Length: 153
Image (cartoon, rainbow, N blue to C red; front, top):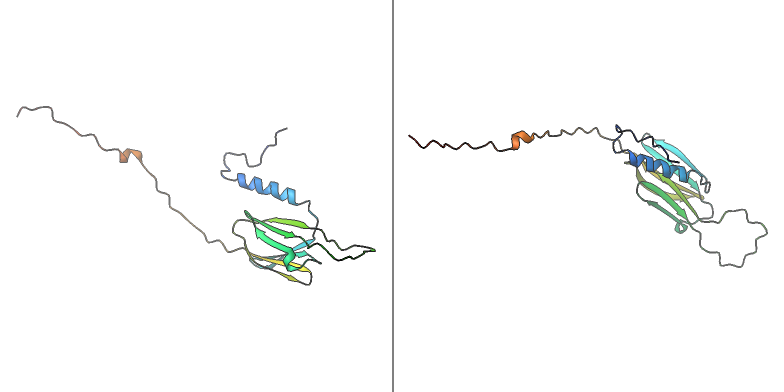
């Protein structure tokens, strides 16, 4: 069965990348670990907070890959000979992705009390008007030369 795209209208030129972004969002929406919050910390600022208890700073990796914020956690192997009677604290690796709108910048990340905070900022877009030159091919063509064939004078 063929899927009909919302962006298939000939009036929506160049919006095919939005469809790819929406597909990426659908794939990452099912992820449940680690839990996270997204809060607005200012008019143009956001903060993503992930619960990463048990992860040290060196166990975490925050990158931006093709307009996608990717946060990975991988704990070092526990080489001690611990014997757990109950292990309820998750110690598994994770990858959590967030699709970023065009222009959003990651300002920094820090771990405080088992929470990873990633600060984002959306710069205020400046209105931009560009004048497009209209070319006229008829004006570019050289005018035909006239040759006087009448040699009688």
